Length: 257
Ligand code: ADP
Image (cartoon, rainbow, N blue to C red; front, side):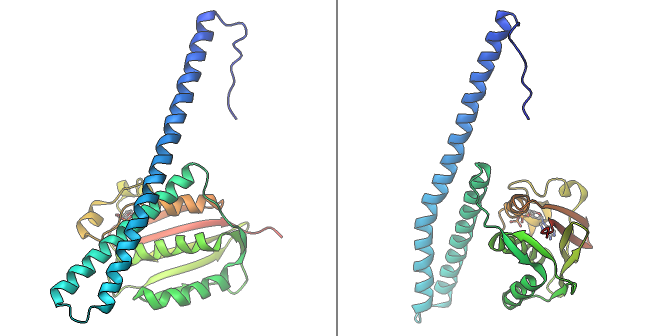
């Protein structure tokens, strides 16, 4: 709640000051809203032409039987940069939506054990990495948005893959607690230093090591993951040892029967 100060008997100057302050705050919040809207409009406007560019590049690559290796490589680089930018714009849109409270969640009961198995069967095909599962037998039911939850999981697995060696597995672990469940994504990769751990969920923040690795990320992934998890009444935490690996843990409330 907002603390309201009773100014009925305050001197005139104080009342005036309060009034000015109020006006300033209103203007600030209008300006803030304006910025958000602008960001969201710009992202949206840029995404459309880029999606067309990406489409043309894909079809040029598909049909280009006569392309030289150099030409093919140039098109592939152009395509991957276009796609990365589309993803960045999508991320910015998501964050702008979340900021203005316009991110919608379609919550439904999900039996996490079954859902995880199903989602992971699909992921396994693309992941190009061994993914181990630790899933208990007793059904764990939560209330969540399956599309958003998958986005969270993909993002974390994707990071795990990016920041660890190809020979090491990623582990996805589900565990029930009394009123909540914990979903963990663990890797045995480069890990995250203590100072970085404190900032890793900030927008655009990337640890030095990630920058030098040139993994082509944007530093928005974890900011979105956190927003999505919190939007579903959960929270996310991190434990990591540099050189050993990282464990991202999501806690979500169980569906009360
Ligand atoms: P991106 O991966 O696009 O840079 P993220 O928001 O997903 O952005 O991650 C932010 C930063 O956190 C990364 O740049 C990297 O430094 C660090 N990071 C994220 N996940 C891991 C991980 N599993 N292991 C080591 N570092 C990580």
